[in-house]
Length: 224
Ligand code: COA
Image (spheres, rainbow, N blue to C red):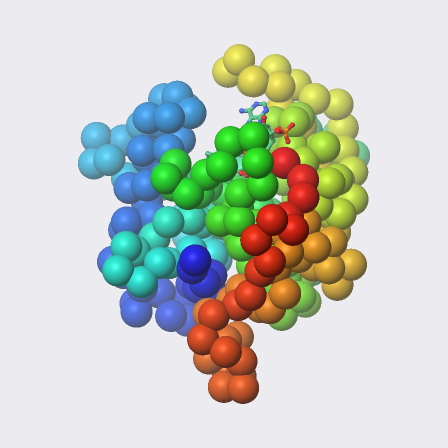
């Protein structure tokens, strides 16, 4: 499988090609597959107002294939989707703090998805998100998402909490959520996918005692 590379303002230059590939994949997936036509761009790159220097990308990179999964995290103290576009999802105020990031744009390429059964590729991204948060002192994530994510995230042990009532938007029912990203969330997420080691690329290289790949037990994964 693959590891998660953390790409932020400090190492963006080294990941120029992978970031480009990821913007194009986002266009294929969100515009082409999900039909979010408001995100369509003639250059075939899905880039929005929150793809700024402050955005952190978690890219799943498979050697020889390139980017196969990804997600985006934006500090909540900076402009983000909930603060700028959907503040109505948090009627008591959009949560903003140093230790809160907004999570958007998770994807796995279709070839690695496993409809109807646990998808290790998605599990790697979920674990990478929580590991990133633990590393950077991020204790909660805010999310603008469709309501089906509430059950999904509860199963992962992220304790989703609605910030308000759902609304209808472009044919989807969306809601604002907060989730926890502490050690307990990492433990339950790893268990759900039978992942036993760090999925982060940098982590693996900082610790030479770790083996060349992380381990999981095929067949032991649970959850959707
Ligand atoms: N509407 C309603 N339910 C949905 C759904 C949708 N659009 N997409 C998925 N679900 C349900 C599935 O039916 C499944 O239910 P189950 O657990 O009862 O079987 C559950 O949610 C999990 O779906 P699945 O896609 O298998 O989850 P995953 O964790 O393996 O992968 C993604 C999640 C997001 C990585 C993957 O679906 C993907 O790459 N999708 C395209 C990009 C996208 O839509 N991202 C989300 C918005 S940013």
